[in-house]
Length: 298
Length: 253
Image 1 (spheres, rainbow over the protein chains, first blue to last red):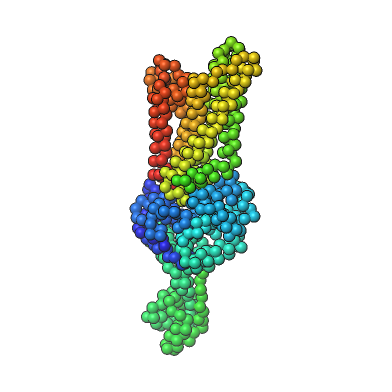
Image 2: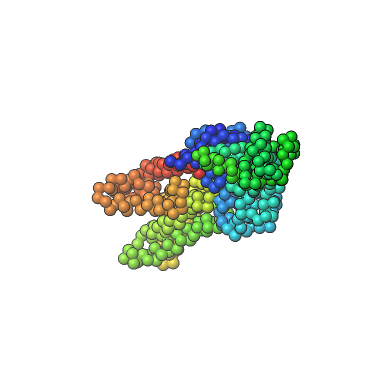
């Protein structure tokens, strides 16, 4: 469990994070979405006690990160895969981390195997690709077998096989009841990874919701009456049902009412239909719509 | 704390440059000792045979000052390389009590520098003695003043390596750490140039190091009695440690 309450971070004149309140629950992968510069990394750094909030509080497992007794056993983090000394081997990198966390060397070999870097463990990190470094970084996050994982853009730099691997790893960790908080600036990256998303824009919370709900919002139905005159009547009837209706040159675009209900309504009003097409726009579009709305407000 | 020290020691050993710098410091001191002794006829205008044996060994011990400069680079890069590679982030994630990280780094740098400086002191002393014996002269007796000179000279690299570490932590840069440590090393030269500034001479770390080594003469501007010198040196270390602790703790990592 991660809880942010009114977290604000100001750098001089710049308000990087503005009064952010959200919870990240255990047992699910929660995507942390926002455009580049929306404040995701700053928020994650505050979650991890690297940066101090200007105001507000963030707690992990009920405490401030700095107050955790053995942080590596409670929280695993991957912030930037480039944060490694290029002259050190992957094994040596994980060994100093294990030493700092008071963990045994055997655990280093376990995580090296788990992320598939065992064969390259003695190579210098400077020779590693970004994808390989991501794997070493994830190994570092897993070292203490923590209940909470905070990963900043873990899919960045990975090839398709690597992306699939991280996805199933994160979902497996969530199934084990862990809290998994993963940032990304690409909605479609999270669509198949996260069950829940926290969306921010301009440092402020835009929305926190289940991916299924977002998908539902994204789903629309294109409806076109055979008679152009019937467009108005059908539109009013749908609005009375609680639908969001947009008039297009071809007919109507309807959100919030299922296709079968639309068909029955048309039948009740004696309106013949030329088209009734369920049409799911991508999550990417609804995400962009969400952040665009936020942009207008700001 | 134990875990943090072990972690910093693992870091030190697992990057090739740091152990190499340490070995280089010892070898450079030895090389310079040889150079100083062999060039005595040029620099002093008299041969080894015309000088007191203790002075010849003393000249060889000046080689340790070169070790001090190499160990500054070592001390500074222990902190600076973490900021340049971004390693400071995972370090503070694993040890959120940042004071422990600073203390562990200081312990590792201090002990490594002490080991290297002690080895350099032994080698430089031996070099002086071997040159004397090679010239068919009597070796200098290993008496209390010589032991004090050797031990005192070996303290300087430890101190300057710690200065470089503290400065690199504050400035978040290896280069910055080295420049500040060099400036502290050269402070007595700078204050010597400006008339009237020699009143601060006894307050400088160089005066403390010289006082401990017994090379400053009573009655001169920078003279400090050994106890006063020790207090001054401890004071400087506490001041630098305090400033770096405060900066590392209070700033965002």
